[in-house]
Every structure is written in structure tokens, then in C-alpha cells.
Length: 220
Ligand code: DX5
Ligand code: ZN
Image (cartoon, rainbow, N blue to C red; front, top):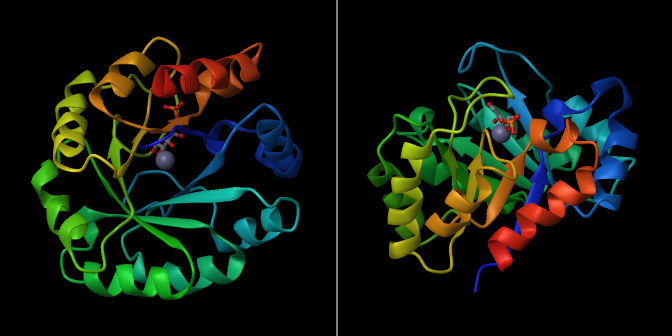
């Protein structure tokens, strides 16, 4: 059965103190660290790239769950593998012509392959990638429009999580955007098991408590 992976989004951390922010999240019980890579083109915001992953990797052994909100994900596979990324999740909207090549390259370079979709993208678009002979290992269902932390959870995206979970009982299904103690039950009931949470964790007086609440909702 699928187990909870709680992934604080480092987008909400103090980037000037990334190593210590990462260290305290792991100490607070996080399973993964979610790294939001934005190119200022696929989304109207610009964040970090492979050099920052490389720097962070020198300070932590944690699983770095990289979410690439970029127009040309293929260009980033090699640099991210070299930098020490653990998971590489690309968007289906920009990989219509090369997702087979992307998956193959990601796995060959030793990373886990994931595919993400925006709230407006139909779930059917990722089915071929999950059913392919060399499939993605995770589907990230965006629960806000990608680009910024701190947005409101879009409950209507839960239909997609439900449909995925019904079809693929053991698939890792990640949700990202607006997750926290007040929305986690909707996502967990729908079938999500990998939970990204930025502002709800970093904005909490007791982040460890929030991480534990998220985990309990998924694992029961
Ligand atoms: C949005 C990013 C998210 C974001 C989540 O484009 O993909 O990972 O940081 O932040 P919260 O949990 O604050 O919505
Ligand atoms: Zn993300």
C-alpha cells in the first residue's frame, strides 16, 4: 500500500539559509524536501536552478523532490542529475512530443521520474505515461496554478486524484498547493499520498506538529 511522503516546499523557506532550513525540516519529520524550479517562462516566477540544488546537496542526504516548472525540461535532466536531485518531475503540458525520452533519460541518470499537471489539464493526459512500459513513478496533481506559494487549495482538482487512485492503487500521487491541516483530509480521502506543503508548514508556530497532522491524515 502507498505510504505518506510529507514534502515541505522549500519555496516558503528562507533561501538565504537553505541548508539550515532543510536540516530543521528533516528534524521535524519531513520525508522529502520539495524544490520548486521555475524558469520565468512556463510560470510567471523565477526561483532556483541546478546550482542551488548542488549547493544544498553538500549539506543534506535528504530526498530532493524537484518540481520543474520549466518550458524545456529535457535541458535540465543532466544538470539536475549531476547536482544531486533525487526526483525529477516535469509538466505534461510541455512534454507532449518527448515524454518517452524524458522518462528514459531521468531514470538512466538515476533519478525517479514524475509527471505534473496544472489544474486545467485533463487527467487523461497522464494515463499514457503511467501505462507506458517504462512508466513515470509519480503523478503530481497541481492543486493551485503553479507559480507561487500561499495560494488557495482548489478542491475541484480532487476529482483527478480520485480517478487516478481508482485506476492505479499503488501509484505515488502527489498534491501540491494550498495543503495544510484544513485541506489535507480532502486530499488524503481522494487518494493522495505525497503531500507538498509550503506556507502551512513554514508559517506554523510548530512545523513538526503540522507535518505530523498531514502524515496522520494520509496513513491513518
Ligand atoms: C507552486 C509550487 C508549490 C508551492 C506550494 O507553484 O509548486 O510547491 O510552493 O506552496 P503552498 O503550500 O504555500 O501552497
Ligand atoms: Zn511544487
